[in-house]
Length: 238
Image (cartoon, rainbow, N blue to C red; front, side, top):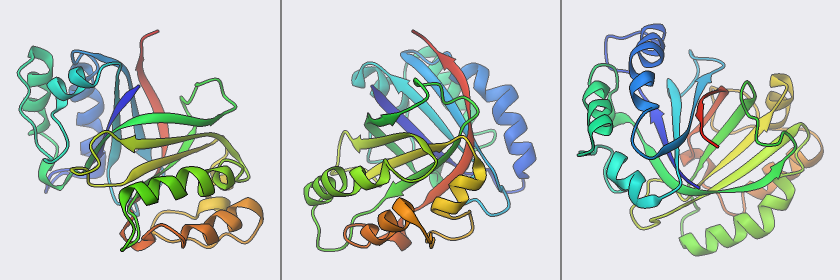
């Protein structure tokens, strides 16, 4: 499954509440009908005043060409779709999004752990947008992340689902990957991964502590945006 993740930034002069209201009531009914979208989920920040972004919009496609036709390809934050609904969604973006300030990521999702049978609606999620350390190639980064770090991260206390997302076009992407860790309890997320307001964190126990120590072997953590929010399922086609 291919996934487009947009890290949303509201326009100047708009409050977070106004942004969310427009996004949910005006834009979402259009975006959910974009050609080729089979799943659409949104993530709203648990602490908007401390979050780096106003929300995440995550659209899934079975076919990468359909994704590119609807939302463009990596290399630019903007895009110019030709299909009907995708074009209307892009036009509507100008009513609430600061699109040039909005990073995005296109990748293929790998489910590393799933104790909820894919049902993420209402779960709390920590999304880390990963940047490799200087001197490390993308391939070296992915190898270390998948082979060394993932076996630790999937066992972090409280994690009920863990996805890794690898870029479809590493040479043109803004990030080297995305790590998504889901929790049923927000306090357990904070205990394991810290809260918004800092890109770093300092857990004091178990696998969370071990994972944080291992991060220093491959991640440029201060260059790595992250987002903590609660997921809302908008569309899911079987």
